[in-house]
Image 1 (cartoon, rainbow, N blue to C red):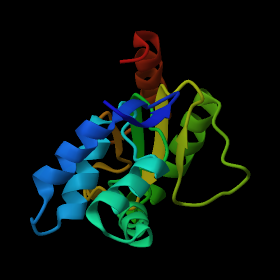
Image 2: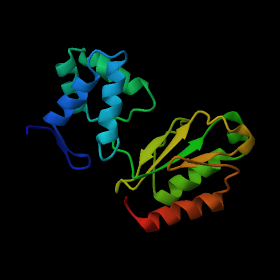
Image 3: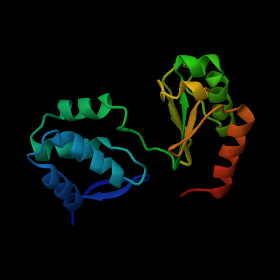
Image 4: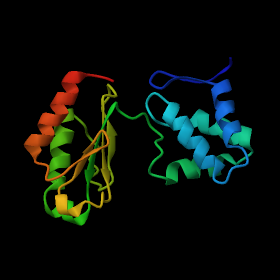
Length: 177
């Protein structure tokens, strides 16, 4: 078993596993998307390291630039390690007008996250201990429930700062998955 990728956070991805995933998608429409999705699912921290993308390009014959373009274009792919718990805050118009920005600022403060002074609407920040990733999304399509927050794939509506603080603290107490 030859090691292709070894990193401190994502664990070891072996060449045999990569080759099996690539072979399972060969000849299928959208094969690259399927390969990247399966690789990310198997990554402990749900991301695609650069050396893995390079290996996929080499084995599939797809140019590296195209593999990287696909991985960086689609929001479902992550190029950085993700936390064990994901807090996604809606930044759509209804959520914005009903207080999603203060929710974002409060959870960032609570987790000690800084985004280099950039006040962008598109945020994806992970705590150094990889326990939490906080990100924003354009819209969940749940405007009647604004402000909306998704915590570990569960939608929460009419979220208050106090409720979000409590939920994050409960997850923090439980520790890493």
